[in-house]
Structures are given as C-alpha cells and as structure tokens.
Length: 112
Length: 117
Image (cartoon, rainbow over the protein chains, first blue to last red):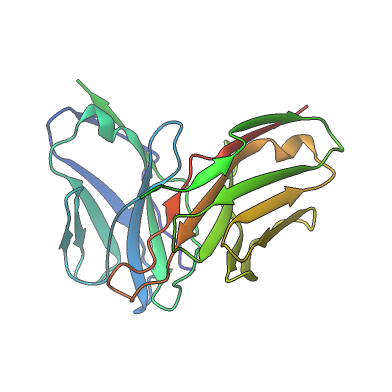
C-alpha cells in the first residue's frame, strides 16, 4: 500500500474552515483516497473518500489535486466536536476488505 | 441499526495469561477486521475474517489469533500475554461494496482496552 504524509498536528478556531493536507506522491491509478477520524476514546469513523474528482458529503469535502499526489480534507465550519485525529489512507480499488494501513494522522484541536 | 459491539470494554491480565475478545458486527456485515492501537505504534492491522475465513493477516506473532463464526461474530485471542500487548483492540465490520460507491466503508467499535501487568 502506498504511503501518505500528514502534519502531526493542526489548530483551528471554532466556526472557521479547516484544511487538512495529505501528501501521497506514490499513489497509483487504482488507489482511492480515504479519510477516517478518531475522536477521543472512540474507534475511527469514516469521513469521506474519492478517486479523482472533488467530493462532498454532509461531514466534509475532499479536494484532490489534478496529479492526485496530494489531497485536502476540508471541514467547512469547525466545531469543538471535530477535535480528533484525522487519518488519510490510500486504498486500492481491488481492496474491498477490512485491511487499512493507518499512518500517524493529524491531531486537530479546535479552540472556542 | 446497532453498531459494532465489543466486549469486554476493559480488562486487566497478568503476563503469561491469555485473553479472548469478542466482536459483534453490524447486522448483515460479513467482514470483521481487528486492529491494535498503542501510543507508540498507532493503529496496526491484525487480521480480517470474511465468511469464517481469514482473508488478510498483519505482521503480528502467532500468539495473536482469531476466528469468525457463522453468524459473523468474531473473537480474537492473545496467548502468553506480554507487557507490550497492553493496547486498545479495535474491531471493524464492513460489507464489501462497489468500488467508488461505498468502497467497503469500515465501521469501528469502541474497542477493548487491555492492560497487562
């Protein structure tokens, strides 16, 4: 599985947008970009995923660079409940199973 | 619908003992995977079971084993416990989906926190 690189930590103010970057320079054409987050004392939860085009859902938006070597998870208005560790994961299209390779993630703190 | 249920939530064992952890997946999910989370190593994949067969295995010693039952419930076992086995053990269930659609989104339980003394 190809590797991702994320900043160790980021800070945000409540109700402001947050852009969480992820670099994946060795991404292959069949890799999907997935994001999960882990709130304190909870298991990880799925946030969003995409292949080439930008994606939006009720939780966040995913902006994917044209060369796909980087992506950005966008939280449009951060709330205190968004404080978590965010993981960017590459997952091959053939991998429909339960194996995910987690990196260290980005710990997001949100200030009121 | 009910989420992924893991039992017990907390347990304390001593070195050399063995432990069994249980995971009940979301109804209808046939894949169950297990992860170990420690402060030093982060989240690491242990193994995955699908339709009672181990489909994937991570890089852990043979002391770590698992199984899946016909109702998709899964158990993992760690024998001859070591201090370094102290961790949060997470279970996730999924139902393989169409690539690009839900891509087999994983649903995680809250974990079983094991302390080895």
